[in-house]
Image 1 (cartoon, rainbow, N blue to C red):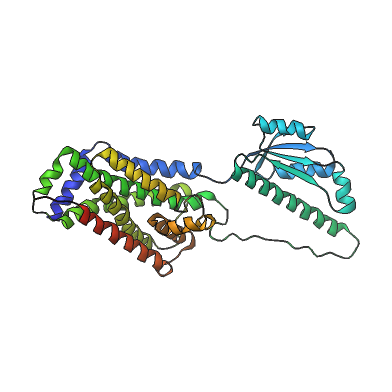
Image 2 (cartoon, rainbow, N blue to C red):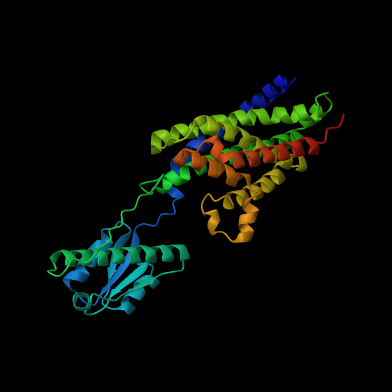
Length: 370
């Protein structure tokens, strides 16, 4: 019985001219575009310089800032008021004002002042650009002190050199962080949306009435709805793996079998959620709006774009009921850290719990009339 029901589901999918194209083209487009667009690294920050010293040290400082790769010199003003005009007109994002006697104070007292003025309309951009500038200034000061120590005839002063070692993402490439999470998002959208529209589509076409008068029990009916999307989820994930390796050179540090096991359980979670929504929806439009509402909340509260640790305590509690959070953590742990199943036992138990909860709910909420 279940064999023929699964065959029916695949025939319905293949008869749809749009769905097979969506299933294959959407992952490709998302994997090729989103890692470059969904990037929270801030570069090419437009810089306005107010150099009141015009010395060799101030020129050297400006050259160091512009060569960092984060700042783009777009304005050189004679005064702070002129520089503020460039901020207001949108030509600059941050102002660095070098005070008069910068070189003299630096050589004589070992201390010189500069002023950073950042456009904080975008708080994240303003805060990061100020942080980048502060880091460069600190590095410039350390560089100058190191030169003085080497040329000084006095006793050698201790200098601490800091060598950063970035584990798991040594080049700090944001795409490495985003690609595993995008795979989870694609799996969520396809394996969640399509089942949500499936039963509702049959309600609207009237074919659900033919199923209701058959001796097929509710469990078999729901299982036949889940298995095709479990297979589709595996195909989509395989396409994502290939694109990740070919385009970004990113392959899992851990086992593919571990990812496959978690992906199978997670697909049952989101497919079960989609079926629950479809059972309570009467039209395709209603199912789409409800599913869209849940997916937006799940994605924003998953830690995909913003770290969960930076959220307020009440938000952290809410994320504990978000299955998307657990699978994103699993993907990043396996891809970047090479974690094994033993390291993610809690994640597996939670996802299995979600899968049982949503699929049992889907079976119970499906109303079959004989």
